[in-house]
Image 1 (cartoon, rainbow over the protein chains, first blue to last red):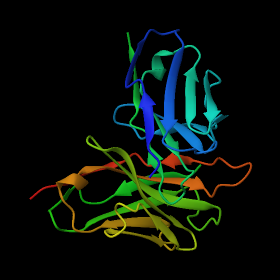
Image 2: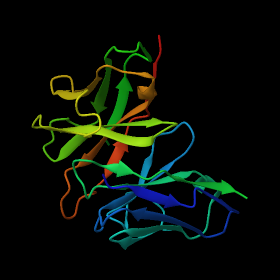
Image 3: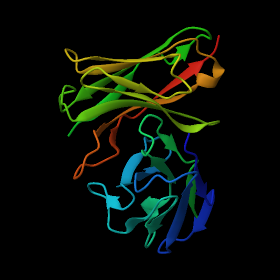
Image 4: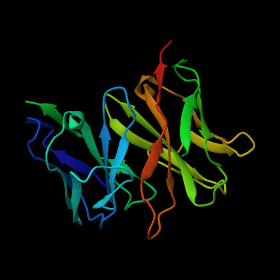
Length: 108
Length: 124
């Protein structure tokens, strides 16, 4: 099983600040990594796929980078609606998809 | 735009079988380039992929759940279903259905459509 470790667990920031979230894989997943946003009581929403491709309708302030084992999701300037939990997910092992434990971005 | 909606009992007794259905609207479940998945989320284990089914009927299951999981598709009803047998309290979770395109160059290679989720509690 490919283990995805996200850090930090919680990120306390103010609107307008830059958020940098990390996802580290226990083995190489090439670029086969996605990022999701989840708000309370809602399903996860796809933000980024294949490490750096924004999904349809996702604002340009969201960007993804990385390959192999180290990945980053960056929110360039936090909007009020961006405070949520973010998860990474790998598809490198297609028969055993796994998710990271999440990073909560909270208002400072 | 495809939409997904989960349905099924919210309470299941220990040792029984959990059964959920996902209804697909706004598109055909028979589209050959898509797969249909189940994911669950519990406080203890976060997001956990359960498995997927293709329009061909072939399936992939999470190895940790494989012995207890069956996913099937009913193209006449535009639905796919999850059965999880011998449930325990550890199976209490919010269950989501989701879909994505079979990975290929130029496609959105992730689960980009999700249902709203349904809470299932395992308790006597």
